[in-house]
Image 1 (cartoon, rainbow, N blue to C red):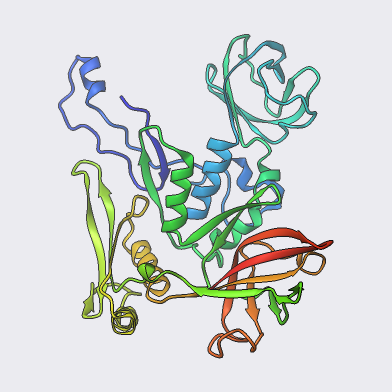
Image 2 (image 1 turned 180 degrees about the vertical axis):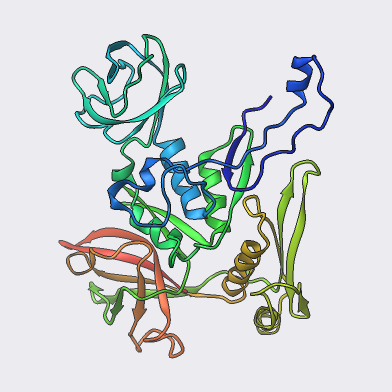
Length: 391
């Protein structure tokens, strides 16, 4: 029977409805488990987080699916074995990668042999001794161990995840994700699909992962000047590619593993849209019609959601995709001095007030998000080149 990892909150595969028999092996080969999904570990409560969730709650909200993959699947060490049991709370594992004191503090300890789970309160690097919060009373030499959420508090900008997922005013607080993962896959691909279907980006900066919603939120600053290098103005602009503008949208979701296909969809174009929803309507129909008229193109968009089963979540995603992909967006390269602009990072939202260059329709009003930056040296001066995109 395949090992099924469930991420999200829908039910697992259907129970086999055969009559009971004594052929145990045959029954196991044709049975499925009824699962709800993975649960929050203690990291959701660490650092005095206040997001409306607690350890052992079911994970359904997309930012926390992303955080769980990082903490529970990537920041891990697996296939370890106990070298010595000093006592029931002091475990030595020679295979641990780090010899730095306190490196595993707060990480989650799983003994796959005794089925004991706890976390580490201390780590002595010189002897590779883990100090357990709750005693592993049956631990023995050669028990199989794995450790998750290693350095999680140092590697995750958890406040950025709570901005998007907290139950009070999180930007995606009402979105529900679910997926059965029953085959080996690339974590990078999982994170990419999670980000796309939640309309977010995941940025790694200053040695931390930060989650950013592609929403038009409050600006972080207004920029009014650019730097000059050798008499040249540090600014240029372009439009996003025309092939990224779409005139009709078909979003498929609720994947049926038995049928091997999606069984639901939302649709909108310039002539109409799927009715019965709360958010999809005439506004999105008009955006599609305008895209077709303004750009003189016919370009259909179709996507199958692997994480979405919920009708409302799929509808909310489609509304965001229509708003995002029915226009060319202004992008700009903006150069400034490092010492004055080093505090800005990818994901920050900026208003540009620079009428000599920014179009009148965007100047001092539209918000731009930083999506890239590079640091350069020129003639003894240090510059930052920012790439910004209109939201």
